[in-house]
Amino acid sequence: MQRLPADGQRVLCWLPDNPVHLPGLAAREQRHVVVLRFAEDWFVKNPSKTGRTTHRHFWLGEGSSNCFFEQVTHWAPLPPGPGAA
Figure 1 (tube, rainbow, N blue to C red):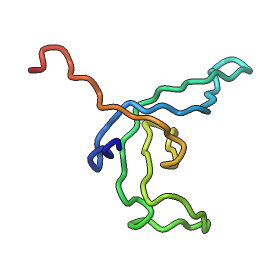
Figure 2: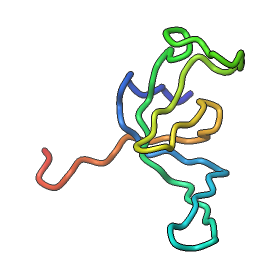
Figure 3: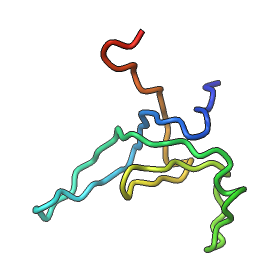
């Protein structure tokens, strides 16, 4: 079983269905790999105002790319940057 990321950890995530609007065009493109931040127990700390029942965890995006936990099928830690030991 894959271990969940640490709360607040930024990870690479795979979204099977993630259409993105292309600026300046009337087109969309699938972007399956995105960087998201894991939010452990998000809906325990922030109950849904719409009554949506979902997993208690959440993925916070950069910009407007937030995702419900169940939308992400795979994740991996970000690789270390140049010069990282």
